[in-house]
Length: 307
Image 1: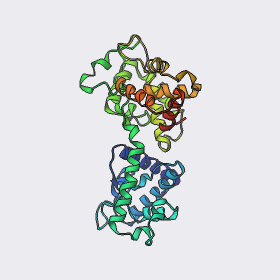
Image 2 (image 1 turned 90 degrees about the horizontal axis):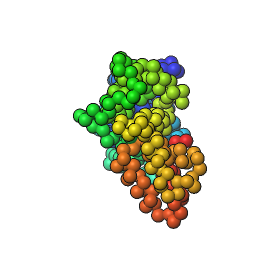
Image 3 (image 1 turned 180 degrees about the horizontal axis):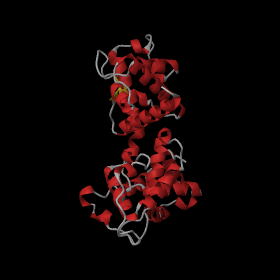
Image 4 (image 1 turned 180 degrees about the vertical axis):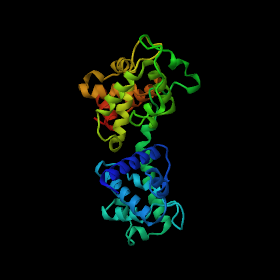
């Protein structure tokens, strides 16, 4: 496989594994082979997918992420449901804590119940780490069946704009990873705004990063922060960002934050429904620090500010 194809396939698989972690699911080597368009059987498949997963394994270590490749398991055989030998060998190679803890020989040769326990633990770490990407979003309050609230066009929308096609919408990086209600909102908005605004929006997102898949969590955050600049129907022309800014102003300690901290908090809360936003503020207020600004800063640390 050529180097540019390896890079593309690695990015595709890493993005897929993050989505699976968000959905709390595993996959198989055969499914990943089909995803990147190679034969899903035989030694060549195992060698190619194994090589791609090795890249991702080391990338996760560099990013201090949990081991995403623990989500890739065997489809059949005596070790069905468990990662293959390559995964266990890599844990040994990098001196992972799980490998060090097992002192009865090579980790790959450990009893199946031991490996199942370790794999289950690593998979749960992936689910916990990435579940925030699948949490409440700024559009959570809107239901597809009641999308009339979303479809009422603010003033200035073109009444005769052509609806964007699925392929045109797919040009928005990771459009397919957004929740269904978000995708419906975007489709409705740009069908009324026209293609010029859609192309401008796509350009703004693409200019942020040349390699979106490898920094997916922060880029999904960035993508949703772009939507935070959209106007809320029925709110007098205010954007999600502006409403969030007003809310933040009333959080005790907010004014003492640095400007970059204030901006992150605003964008972060803009990507929440009103109910979810209230829950987040309650979390801040109950962090147990006597100094209000310290509570907010601890919250920002807990949320792993991508900036």
